[in-house]
Length: 282
View 1: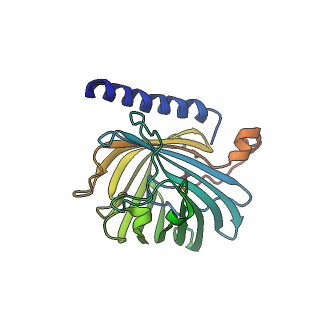
View 2: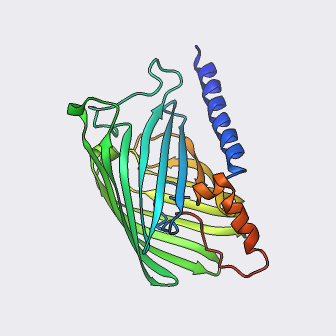
């Protein structure tokens, strides 16, 4: 098959994924990261948050799926799990490859337990700490390794204009990040453009590892609890990440969206003044 045909088929797969996300999003509800940087907004108590992120890596001719579930425990604490680094190579003999030895890139796929705790200083400022820690799976027990990413963020909420600014530091190992420094900085921002409809979103992670990149895009609200986020990847120099783009589907209340409870609660809220958060980005 020629490179031109492969490229056309690859882009067709990406468009199909985007279209599928739009169809699902019509019934759903909203988000965990800006793109790759945690926005440090904790899931509401007794709610189950869901996020599906698809990285369309054009240069590498692959897709990467990252699925996240988080449950709001209360006390500004959420617990959950990720199934991440699931690479999909439509044109290879092994469509979903497994990496258990090559440390130049992250091991994959990964199953990670997640936890995030926020400490509210006042209505405009908070501190959050979190971890994503687990193992690679799909391989024999001797090939399993610990994967971890840990972070601390400072969060500033601006009521006018409605915006969120996040800056922090992270450290992780090569099983999670691949080759490159395991320590670094990251930042993210979100600015409301059209109230409750469209937000401008951007984030950046330092380093030459697999997450060393920036992304700038839009967060489009399909309902108050569901959003679709997309934007192009801007790879850091020396990272080898190449070109591509990110698509995310976010649901703030997965169970409520599926059962219709979220829509009933939204309808019941009409006619009374409700607090609208600056962001549904988690």
